[in-house]
Image (tube, rainbow, N blue to C red; front, side, top):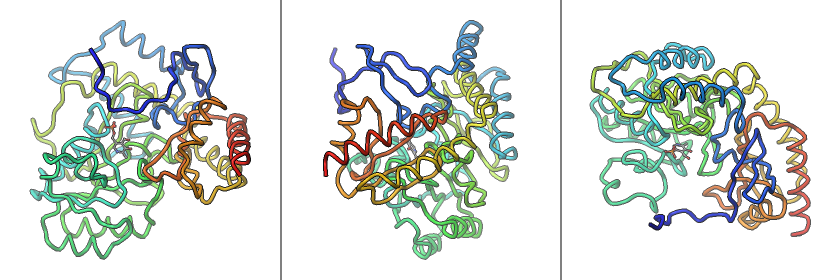
Length: 378
Ligand SMILES: Cc1ncc(COP(=O)(O)O)c(C=O)c1O
């Protein structure tokens, strides 16, 4: 059987990984500044993570949501404490798109309205309402286009206010720092304005923390830079360090009811064990503070790379913007320097999403490699 061919692949096959290092099938070593698309939070194969998952597999790997599972409660308690979002309630699922799908659906159940406001260059996943709220026509199929979504310019509070007056908007969904779009972010004034407009119009404010959450931005959640309280927070990527798990945090004024949301795989034993291990390590190794400090170090060093126009993002969710497309540079970084980096919708942007454990020596090595390659180019 052939694979359905939807991914343009680099000619490299990782078969082994440890912390920020990946080895291909020929034994060649790579530095991982991409984290498998912001997924690897505590480092590949962290011993505590491996131990927890192996033990869990020996005990019980899966049972459905029809029975008690105290691991879900342990996860919720640890997550509440570490994120300072203790008052929220947790619903677990298995991916970022599923988290946003549930967030949007819950908002609509809550206030009975049906239209969604999202923002230019935003990305929220590839499923029904999540993809409709994504600003990329190429991935919206006719079946998705039936959803009522209005995409507004990021930062235009007046446009939001005008739309909310029509009283049909169930939710506003926004990333605190845009990932796929290219690391743009709105101002604190805009986020605070959204919070007030949502409160006054019975609209749910959904913060999509799928990529920025779990410490990547240098705070547990990216919205915490703006001192706001979203109604729903969606999360996934860094949550399981590679194990598929997602979830939403729901503010207490949104009430649960049996059957309102559901999933077969969400919150299973192995997924919970993975996420608990991630939370343990984030706390024990102070990785959120580390992400902030290492990110600051990266920004300071990267500012000296010739041709870098702008450095975007926060913590270890960063982008280097050049005034030319970086596709060729990414290829050279992989094939000549053995370094994984990410791309974005903004073709001039090189994305840096390493495990939060990355050290300054590894960053120095990356800066030297890029400097050498872009200097050759000039
Ligand atoms: C901000 C954001 N939301 C949602 C998603 C979708 O997540 P998933 O691919 O797990 O469905 C992504 C994935 O890149 C993302 O960056």
